[in-house]
Length: 296
Image (cartoon, rainbow, N blue to C red; front, top):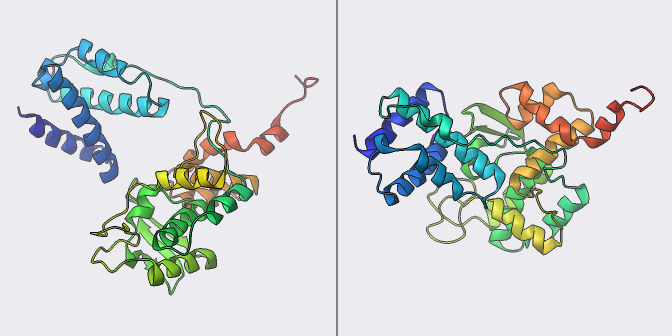
């Protein structure tokens, strides 16, 4: 069976597991990278994969971030299970994929202070078209906790000015979410639309600043660029990308004693249990739960 045909069958396998389009795209990108490695090892069909191939493939990830390694392991493990279920491989090689289980540190995620967020926004040149765009993007991540993919995927018709809301379908969950347009965010978007957004047929709200004015790239590097420009330090091992702003919002809402039932819809989570990951970084409230040595 041709390699592309196998990938097409794998996508059908993902459909049965109700994976979103963004998840399937991530899976395919990683599987294609794995496939290129196999071809370099003279493995021209998946039925010839050996545990040695898998082991050698992951040795190349020794210097990568642990989240990258963990995600790669997960994707390849799922793909190996599929190959066995489809009877392409004689044995289930999913057990040969390394099982990396990293303990989650309470201090692993980078938490931004309000002063740092203001400094981050202040260094953006809002007099330029790019600055107007980047300001609105980062503001939406910080104030609404929207995912990078959802901000980049926003369409002009997702903006409901009459109801002052953003109505969109999340790329990760395929679930509809509605978020408020505050005065701060509304003014930033209007400023971009009037004086920063180039004329283009692209239906996306945010577009590239260079022809052909298509969809913007991942916004993570914008955060890094402005963080350095603002002189905001980042300790080794901590995250300061666009997702950290989403995490920061959730933690601040918890610290402000906002009901969990109100937080998880804001972040677009389907399962309320998902919000529990943010409890570990709410250090101030965790201190209140600590037992004294006398009690112990």
